[in-house]
Image (cartoon, rainbow, N blue to C red):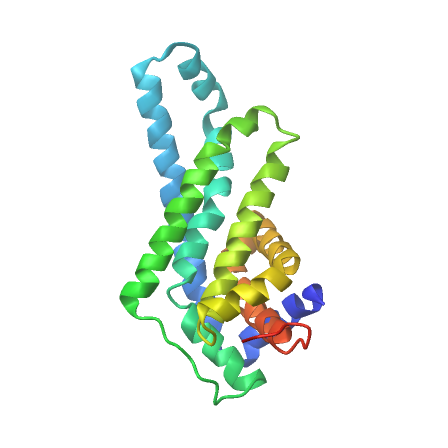
Length: 226
């Protein structure tokens, strides 16, 4: 079902004229990629200039490849945090076509959206920095990276969409019932965001897909809401 919804999301982007968000995501993603990449390059230069023994030698050896790898690691975190700013408009367009246009929506204020995005960004950056030592054990790192990022990305995206229609208690009920599916969706979204070129459009596709998933789970009779 999840793969089908991802494919349907691509159709929605065309039919609902969401291309402007796609291009917005493209431009922001390119900008973020360059900022992170050259930021890491600059950091490596600073560390190299400090001449910190074996660590400096290691950094110099890794050079460009380290910069590229670290950029890919932090790219999904940054892009997803920024996507939250226009997630409301994307969700409304999808719901207006496929679901009831008379849904009661709890719109987030700009300050609330900013606070949520910054908090999410800080948590993910901290966790991704914490797992960097696992790069020394390459077979283990992908498992740790996609587990942590997949869970947090899926959970955050789902909560933002669900909180528009339900109170926190009801959202928690759905999350407990669908935690595995939310995790799987998050892993897929993060996985796509680590693929060069494709990752430039992944945030919008992921957002549309999560809107569809939310409404599928919302209609699930096994989920009892208060």
